[in-house]
Image 1 (spheres, rainbow, N blue to C red):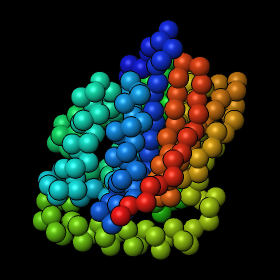
Image 2: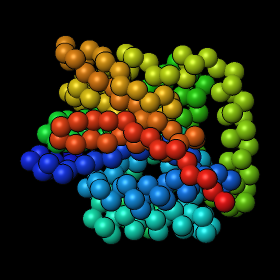
Image 3: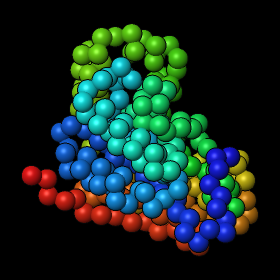
Length: 255
């Protein structure tokens, strides 16, 4: 388990974020995230980023000024004493140790059990729970294989960028044709996950449907907490030893 105890510290705060989809063509999201890192996140002892921090990730050798800016901003938060953990999403699963070192954040397995103020909590991006989307799950299985990733990483940077742009267009078209139910999680998978890890709380992103869902797992009440995306506002989950709260913040006007 990752350490997130501070059981008797009344000022203890842990934040969870996901689905920012940072990209150079969305300066409003970037500005909101940088503001969050500077003004809100320093209140927390721990920040978990549960995937899709970036709209796409073509490799740690992408040394653009935009990528560097984000890495430096995250590292600046860590210098203040906030521990930062990252779980890969479906858009940035190629993010590796080089960027993690630049940003001074720790990479976690795609499903991780943490000790959150004394309670075992499962955290993940959430795309693996959407088992009814069989087309995506087939791509997910292939894209996580070592041979596929080695093949992609061997391509020139400009080719990878072109592939990523094409995939975004194809993904948007495919998503538009799928029903909302298919793209949501499968409840039986949620229960299976909670029971496998002997936990009563699951926190994830991916579906862009922020909410707290009640389920039954391990023959008792459990909760599935879904993080909000950052397409139209900033969004995060604030957890203290006494409470959990989904929060959001409107974008500021970017001049």
